[in-house]
Length: 254
Picture 1 (cartoon, helix red, strand yellow):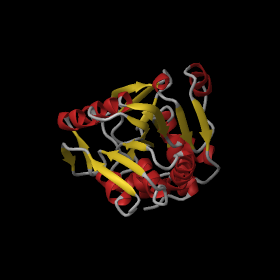
Picture 2 (cartoon, rainbow, N blue to C red; picture 1 turned 180 degrees about the vertical axis):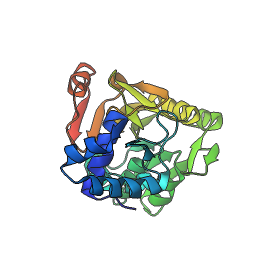
Picture 3 (tube, helix red, strand yellow; picture 1 turned 120 degrees about the horizontal axis):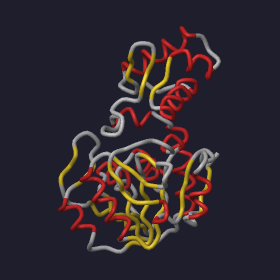
């Protein structure tokens, strides 16, 4: 399923509240109850939402992410805009680290015409994409391959990344909470992401607008560890203030 704009708005409304009633969604989106119920049913069948009597909630809450294949379709247009904006700022002839996520995979596709890149990644999907660029050297992190999304995690991955110091780390994240914390679901992935941040001269965060106020269980870091943020819509309050306080330069790709 590739959600249409109305369904994406519905999903965003649920994510913002955690759980909502069908009546709330009908009023907020300006559509009939029948339309809301039909959209909810389709999205629940795909695992994007969980139904309960009279309402709907985000599946998995803080402990489980949406499946990789479903995340590929969610906010795909916004992720592609972000990817193009990031690629436009990446210079040729530099060293990068890209981590796990569908947004970093979109960025990898946008980097296919760059030259002289040396890319370290713990994402086999990124490695496969960028290996098609003969002017790019790809270094794959060692460790445990997570079958559901081809991410490489664990202590071996942490030890491998510690060997390098790169120009730019381009990272995705599962959620940014209102206290400025960057959060994810798998503590093994989080340890790798923390190491990636520590081994980069600059850290660029690529996060679509659904990531703001999205809860997740494990803290990766804080906005004050980020140099630049690329997103697809103006951040809601209180994030503009948090970004200013953390001296993070952010760009909204339209």
